Structure formats: structure tokens, C-alpha cells
Length: 199
Image 1 (cartoon, rainbow, N blue to C red):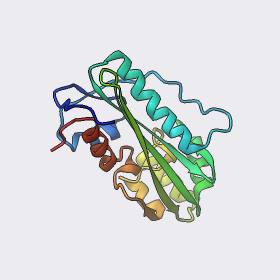
Image 2 (image 1 turned 90 degrees about the horizontal axis):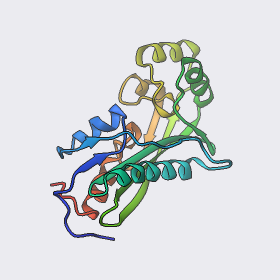
Image 3 (image 1 turned 30 degrees about the vertical axis):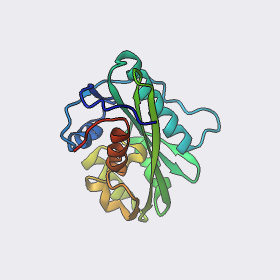
Image 4 (image 1 turned 90 degrees about the vertical axis):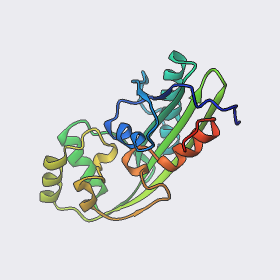
């Protein structure tokens, strides 16, 4: 649905991620970041794309309920290793284990986006899959990368905007910022559809 223009409404990023904050700042729109209160535990048997979409929408809805006049952006990213979801490792040991498993494999990073405005009833979500082919990684390379970047808050331990790019053979996608955490082409589209003037 397309609502009437709501460019004067507050814009909120439902995330505390510094990566998403930096990306959304590129659009030069005034916004506030608010932490969503969402349990990110996967449901039994839930595939990575469905998990990412559910969490992105849950985050946007949670913040929108607290700020019903605002346009709220929610996003989530799940690494998809042959149908198995890989989230943020949180620790060095888990990051090592993730990178060992992804070495030499193709991983799809499912980056989901949701835009919600409670007052107008606007709610839409999209997903931007990014296919990433990892090189065959040596143990020394994994350790050097993790010590340099400490990507423990990144899905699948992959920080492609930094040294993580050296882990990869190829990236295939249609929304260049999706792998970093917020697909800006789709974000602009959904904000325009919601009535927000981007340009």
C-alpha cells in the first residue's frame, strides 16, 4: 500500500548496530536509533530467510508500537550455510568454528528489511540475498583476520567492509550494501513507498 506523504514524520532505525547506523546516515535523512526488544532465537526448523524476515519485521513492529507516528526501519541478517542459519558468533571460539565451516563454501547472507508505520498502517518487508564464495582458509588466516577485525557482532563472522574482503573469492548481489547489514537500494524503495521523501 502507498500512504499519503509522511516526510515530516520521525524516522527511526530500529537497531543499535553501528554498521546499519553508518549506512542509513548515507541517505542524509534525520533519524533516531532505538533498540528493539526482540528475542532472536530461531524457531525449530526455521530456514534462514524466514528467520531474517521474521526478525526484521518483529524489530520494526516493536519500535513502531512505542513510536506509532514514526516510520520505523527494522533489519536483520542471517548467514545461510546450506539451509542452516549462522548468526553473530559472540565469541572468538565460535567465530573460528564458523569460519572453518564456511571455508571453501558458498554462503548466502539473507539480509531482511522491514518498514512499518503504525499510524498509517504501512508495513512492508523485503529480503536481499547475497551469495558469497569463501576462499579455502588457513588456520593462520582465520586467526589473523579475527584478531584484526574482531567481527563477533557480525553474522557469520564476515566483515566484508574491512579485512574480511580478503576471505572471499566472489560476491554476487544486486544491492551493494546488503552484505554490510542494510540494503540501501531496497531501503530507499520502501521509504518512498511509505511516503518518505528520500531525494
